[in-house]
Image (cartoon, rainbow over all chains, first blue to last red; front, side, top):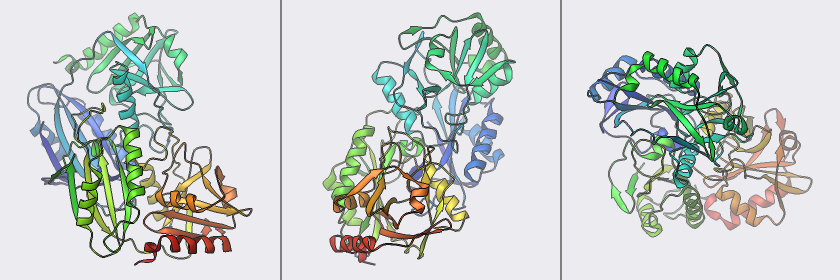
Length: 268
Length: 268
């Protein structure tokens, strides 16, 4: 793993233990799939970072400089580039002060493929409803950590998280799509969850998808279910808890179109 | 400001940019008032850290060692000691892995007194309901950061935060108590908020206090209102938004008892 750290547009050597990213989770992150030394979805990830930075009032460093630094970290392997952007260092106290952001770039091995057939756990850790933060890939991720630990304790690689009203929002590290009644559905994310980049690309590919509420019963009755994220692409789900999901030709067709449009997800 | 960093029980020099405290807010913190080289409320803060570490599955370093290191950082001034405890370093991914925690100790100047009379803003940033994290002083504090920014933008030093049901939970960096109908009231914290150490001490001093739900209207109709935290002690509130709070002899008496019992809050 290689790492580069920036304070504003200046490269620095070490992270301050008073960085607000550590103190309060006061920042954002992005996780990109890198392939053949390139970052095919760079623009979409940077746009989301800009959007989150706007909502939180963070100052973004120069895109071209960060992109060049990211390229510098990559080699030809298929791997993961992570970008962490924080409000930078400040004194003690929540008050957000204007100043240069901290930006940390690091490369990581591509995770091994999910064990197939993919089975999902129903997480008991709920996901909180917080409209002010919903959709953002911010650094306050204790819920995801606890839910992921719960999956591992139960022998699952992934699990579904519901809000306190019992609506399905997401997996611990992926968005979720369901095919039922001849139609694609995915949860709306105005109250919680992360608006994923793979989700965004899929929404632009699917002519007819309902963005709304998904119930547990609705998921279990679905013809096909998949998870998606920007590192792994589409992951077909074959079982949720004890309930088998049969699959559907619509998902096979979508997977093929997705790989045709974004062939770097086939690189190993 | 001085800082010491530990990995488990070993002192280290720099914080890893892959620390889970930064990546996910996967940790806890404590903020202690230090006086005359001592930490009078150490035991209560350490107990809360133990409790949070139990809930999150973090491994605490040795208490005696951390206490000795904290004493080493202090001088005779009244100041603030901050303890940050994280799950330590791990690879990318939410999965919490067992390993040595990171513990960061730092000293900070005592903040200047709140401007008097203290006026509170009604924050529009809600506080999320999340029973799995409620009460803990964890590192996921973006809500507090945004709410505090909102107070500053509106010309207030502090503000009250409500949950999505409209119940008052806390100030951005303090708990809240209300005197009304001849009785003390404070919000219950099973869904959100931090169970503060000053709040805990006050609950043990007050023979008769109702822990329940507080509404905005109930607060505005109160005879007396105060905020409290472990750095500043009791802070009397004299106005909430545009509504004056008259004060009450019960608060004067409580403040006197509090200072008699915990005289280090009178040190400057």
